[in-house]
Length: 619
Image (cartoon, rainbow, N blue to C red; front, side):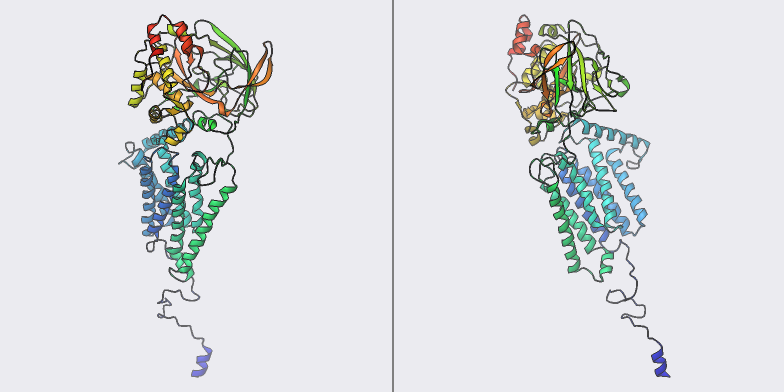
């Protein structure tokens, strides 16, 4: 009986460690389903939070050069660390995944409110309706900076807010990929997304520091997932060991190798390769003229793009204006399209101010070719435009012509222009206080750097009229003290058009048309002269061809392209309207009324004017 019973009854296998089947050795019982522990076990959430923070902040190092200086980095550190710590605390408390995600978004909103909108938030960090209004202003300011500045841009509150918000969201995304979704290798996509920005914008691309920072952080994320994750240890049946380390090294090495080799086959590098290559352009070359931001890049282009040809009845080659930039808030120059005030139809265009004296008429035929922009290049001042396809509007205050439905690409059109005849004599007599002009063109920021105001006052000290002041400023900027350079602003970190950029430019005394035109426009406003900046093209070169204009005759053809992109200041004189000047040395052509010989001949009786022309520029 005993033997039969013993043989007929299968004996349950015994487990070391007792009847409960829980192994004393830490290994799971054979045949038992694995029960992964919550991700809050042990040091895992804290180590992962640190790894994600290192990865995101390391990748963010590459943004130095897109933003000037390092003032933006401390708010970014605060945002990233707060969001990462919130995730770690909740996971250490074994909170539900949905609660962890919601709380991470709440922590991001709280820290952003505390840093950027403290006064509009309840208790300094709880968002209110006032907070959202303030956020809207910050986003608008960031958008204006993107439109109007070239890298490196000033780290104003709007740009830094957007940066902190985006990288705070990136922390949440990487954490979600690495922890609940168990896809740590995919976190590299988010880090590469950060590095695409400097790779596209900065002349020196990502840079070694940013690339190495992101690489170290990425390897830490992979190592944390393999080394500390509770699930990984249970599935492997062993604790920390050579297997986990080997997998981490192999996965990380393959990911880094892929990161280094794939960009080699991506076109767009002018010199070198990722991460130190110059100018990665995955979207190709832009043929449009984006006001005040791509101007420097266009001028630095080794080959011209966006070729435009024109023929004109004017006695000399013309400047083609695309955009008028007049809104200056202290951080940036930006165009003000005044959408509500724009008028439809370009068959009749009228200035919003009175013109006295003789008017010079001209007809110009333009072939935009492959140049693609919502702004229409045209000589100033356009009276009508014929032959355009699509719907176009114009601004009575600036006479800029633009379309929200089409572009200039493949457009052939004829511009009839009517501009006042400007002479040194007429300018010297235009001393009346401007009446028909908006205050927008006179606004000077309250935080104007001392060097700007002191330079303007010194240069114009002996000038007795607005015309004399304008000539003195132009003469100073075109003097031998200043040099034309496309590289100096990039190398010295002031390649933009804000106030701090202007201060650096006046100290270094080297830059290109954006800096010279900005300097003259701001100094003119500081002396009470309305000013703005025109963005378009310098006169260009003869093509050797001729174009017949109906009813006008045959005229020589000129061509311009991205290398001729230019910015120049326009100053307002009552009775004459907007008068262009040319302060940029070696670029464009100074108008007759602003050359020393013309002025000396027309103002021989004006002692103040003669003194301006003979007074040496200040040191």
